[in-house]
Structures are given as C-alpha cells and as structure tokens.
Length: 127
Image (cartoon, rainbow, N blue to C red; front, side, top):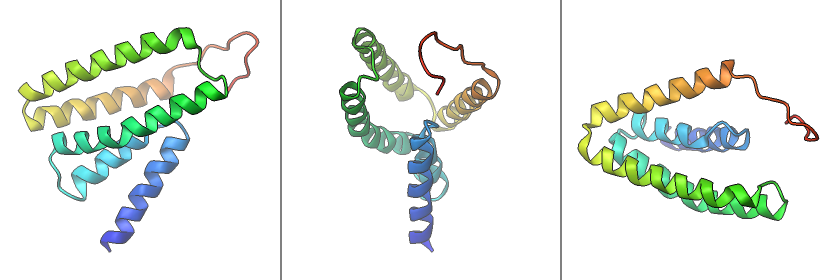
C-alpha cells in the first residue's frame, strides 16, 4: 500500500509541475500527511528537490530563449533574499503556525489563479 501511495504522490507531483501548478505542493502534502513528517522537515526536503530542478529548468528555458536574460539576475537575487528571510522566520515560528501560514499562502495563490486575468502581450502567443 505504501508503494502505491508513494507512486501516486510522485505522479501527481510531476503532473502538476508539468502544468506549472507547483509539484512541490503535492510533495509537501504527501510528506506531511502520509509520512507524518513535521512541516519544517517536509519543506527542507521539498527545497532540496526543487533546487536542482530549478537550475535545470533555467538552463533549458535559456537554451530555448524563453527567459529574458535582463530579468534573470533580478529574479534570482530576489528569490535568494526570500529564501533567507523565510529560513530566518521559520527558525522563530512554531510548527503549527508555519503550517497554517503555508496553507494560507496556498489558498491565496489558488484564489489568484482562479480570478486573476492575464494580460495579453502584444506579439506573443497566449499560453
């Protein structure tokens, strides 16, 4: 039974990631609900899985000219700053509060995805 749940979690994680929905969310839910890992440990594992995939994605997107190089440096710097702030904050937050904040973030992102209309850019296909 455990192998079936593990394979299902891996499949759903990959499927949602391929659609741009955040496969890390599925991994976090699996780790916290089905393996009973504490939130902080699950987020650490998720981050460890995310980093090499992010680097590979950046490389492939640059290769296919899907990233504006002028934006890349700024995005990486802000992303790293967010990671540092998040790590520092998580050292002071209780596990229960961290879990609730994560749930709230997922909820807000979900609402934004449901109700936010994307602006059509001139000369670019609508993906």
